[in-house]
Length: 287
Image: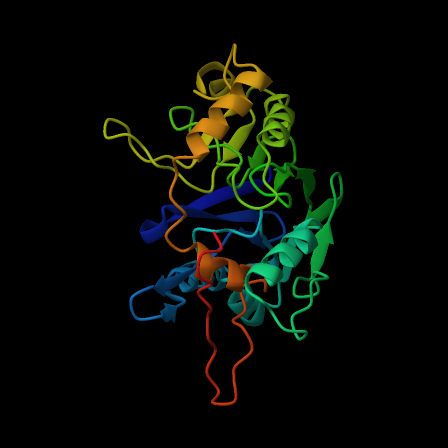
């Protein structure tokens, strides 16, 4: 194996950003980068993303891609800032255009906001291949949590799964966002569980119980054996019923409204108004 994965925790949002490195050719990709955001003041910062950027520069790496697994609802993306710093291309699943259309309506975006995915550099479909130096990255469509979710299979050893799966004792992602679907998520997870038992699944979040340490990675075998929602013996029908009951009692994510306005723009802010300031909207009684 000529690649390595390093994972960075953003504590405020319990989000893992991963740095994928092709060691032989000194190329890298950043998976699901986070922008710091203080909801009380409306202030943003790139301190967390800069930590990763500093590592890239210190080690003389060239950053080719910023890989987004979906339009996140729990943190703001630092993808656009990192693109300007590195020249990397922002990659996301082609289904993002549907997500943009949904939320353009919710936020009453004007005609300046394009819903064709043009804010991103590469819109990829299931099975498409990227090369990071000599490392193959294959796109796996894994919708269900959102209609645009993708996972990134690196060689035959590692997968970045976004929010599709959590650690076995936490289970799986919610499916009650617009366009989400529990049956679709179950089918997507089966694609991941059909990979080799030793394949490592790199997670976007972990919410561990008090008796377990935080973890960013788990094997397919561990998920098949122990996942409380989709492990051995759980049927598709049971999963759909469980998710409907569970999701009905969940609160909206703390940062869903600011996050989605930024993330459907590939991490950029809304266009500044005539005073030069960008604003985020809070639609009342829509979610």
